[in-house]
Image 1: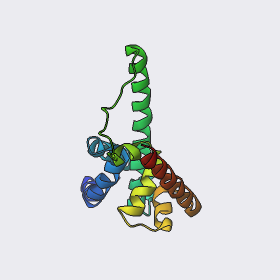
Image 2 (image 1 turned 90 degrees about the vertical axis):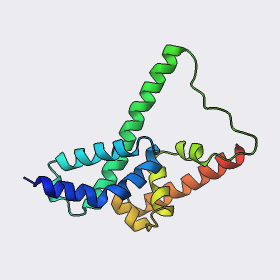
Image 3 (image 1 turned 180 degrees about the vertical axis):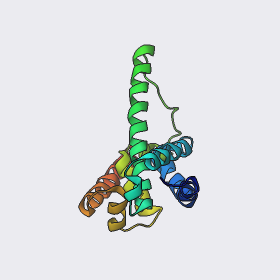
Image 4 (image 1 turned 90 degrees about the horizontal axis):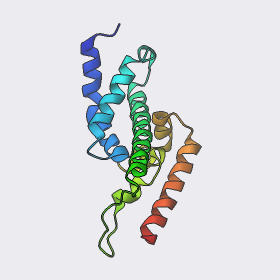
Length: 157
């Protein structure tokens, strides 16, 4: 059994960077909750004792939690729209305003994760592949798709 102080040390050591990462994935309002849920789930996992790269494992846990939360939120919004019989709309933007946050929100969780780790965390494709548990080729493909989508959204809007 892992000592509670070891678990607390692990959380404290990685919390700040995980919250910055989660902020990109789910926004500033939900980032702390996403990280807390992901870390608790990771630390309770029977696999935790055998984890060699705890940082990568926690980053992957945050990405998985963000995806799970998004699926839950999407289902909830769908139920609410059906119940209200009117779609939920964001307020209109002024002409010529670029809303990068809205554009990032329209990327998949994995694409947002790759964009964040590339541009905000200065990770190499190999490091990103380790963190997300995917191949370097998938990292490059997701980054290419994310860039193309962002370019299209930001020039069309």
